[in-house]
Image (cartoon, rainbow, N blue to C red; front, side, top):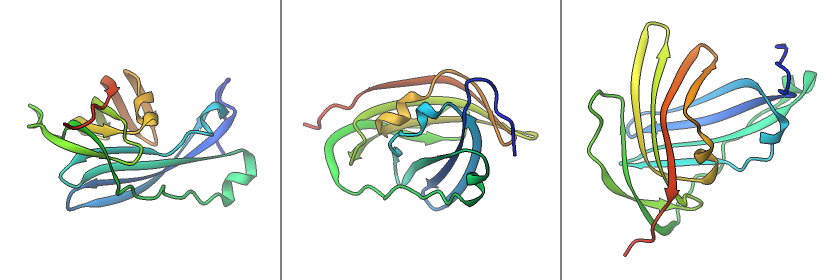
Length: 164
């Protein structure tokens, strides 16, 4: 059990699925947070070309956390008529954008850039595409979770326009 800092009154368990096209991974991470995040809806991000992230959090306190089984949110599949420029890159220099059709609750265009360090490895990640409202909560700054250090250098969301 980890003791949380002041103002962090709950444990948050995030279950995330990330697809980079041909490779899909699922991960579970645990951290301390304010219970104010506990009613957040699922997070969806769609970068085009089969690249996406979907995540949902479960909150718990104390021994109840030992039995929690977080669930992935359902996959979205219904286009909502909105579009955003999209790309996903781990390479310096970025990526060429393409138009991505937003689905379900993806009502925003997200531009997110971060430097991720895990051990000796550092990646510059660019993520542009459609996103649900919870994804827009990302803020510029540094975050450390389970040995992964993330420095978010750009985090912008704008309402996605309806396609012509």
